[in-house]
Amino acid sequence: MSSISFPGHHPSSSHHDGSEHNLYPLSFDGASTSGFQMNPLSAHPPRTPRTSIMSSNTTVFNPEVYTSKEEVEERPTDLEEELPDDEEDGPKAEAKGRVHAEDIWREMVKTSNGRDKALKLLQYSMKLYLLFHYTLARRMPLKAGVGWETGLLKRIESTVGGLSLSRKCLILFNWLAPLTAILNERNATPAYASDSNPSLPPTPKPLLHTFLHASPPVLLELVQAVADDITTFSKLGLLGKRTGERSGRFADWCWFASTLVGLVENGVERSIIVNSRQAVESRLYEESMAGATAKSTPRNTKIDNKELQLLERQDYWLRVQRAKLFMDLAFVSCDVFKLKRGKEAVKTFSGLASALLSSSKLYDRHRNSLVKVLSF
Image 1: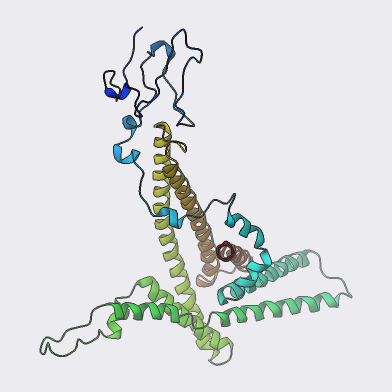
Image 2: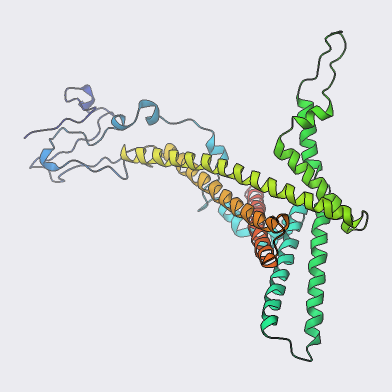
C-alpha cells in the first residue's frame, strides 16, 4: 500500500520509539477493532487525509508544521491580571447577583457626573413629552375646561428650564481638570539653565510657554469649560446677558470642534482594537488547525479567549461612544449653524439619545466597581 509522508514526519526518526513525543499514529490494520485512533489531547482534531492514501505509520498532525517553536510554547503574558474572571462561577458571579439597580444608581448620584446624567435623562424625557404633546395639539386643539392641562404644561416647561440650569451649575469649575493637567506637564519638564551663571538655580519655563506647548484637545477643553462657566454666571445674573450669549456661542464652537476631535480619536482607537482582535482570532484559528486546543494548551487558549472577550468589550463601548459623539454633533450643529427647521425635534431626540448612551456607560462602570468590591 502506498504512503504519503507529511512535513515533519520522519519514519526512521527516534520519535516513533514509544516515547512521549509520539503523536498517536492511525492504524488501519485488518485485525484492528477500533479502526483508527484520534489524538486524545485535541478536542477538535483537523480533518485527516483519505484512508486510501494513509499508511499505518502516518502522523495525524504535527503542530510544528503549522506554527513555529515560539508559538507552540506557552506565551508569557501579564494579561491574566487584567482580564476578568469567568462569569459562570466563582465569587464574581455571586457578587453580580447581589448588585441591584438601585445600588448602582445610588453610587452614580454620589458623583457630580452621575447626578448630571440623571438630571439630563429627566430633562430630555420631559422635553420629549412636550414635543409630542405640542405636535398633537396642533392637529387636535384643546377643548374648553382643561385648564389644569395648560398649567401642567407650564410647570413641565419650568422644570425643564430649572433642570438645565442645575446641570450647568453641576459642571462649574470643570476647567480645573485640564488646568491641572497642563500645570503637571509644566512641572514634569526640565527648567531652563542659566548660561551666564551656571551656579544659579534653573529658571522654570514661563507659563505662556507651557500653554502654547500643551496638547490641543486639553487646551480646547480648558477654553470650553471657562466659556461654559461664563454663560452659567450670566444665567445666574452675575454677568450681563450679552456677555453670556457671546460666551455661549463661543462654547458651542468649542464643543463642535472637540466633538470632531473626539470622533477622530475614536476612529483611531477602534482601528487599533479591531486589528488586535483580528490578530487574536487569527492566532486562535491557527492553534485550532494545529491541534493546540483547550485540552492540549489550556493556558494559551484561555488567555486568548479572555483577551478576545476584552477586545470585543472595548470595541463595543467605543462604538457606544462614537454614537454618543454623533448625537452631540447633531445637537450642537443646530446652535452653531443656527438651524431653524426641525431644530427642537433634532435637539430633543439627540439630547435624549446622548443621555441614554452616556448613562449606560457610566452605569456599567459603577456596576463593575460594585461587583469588584463585593467579590473580595
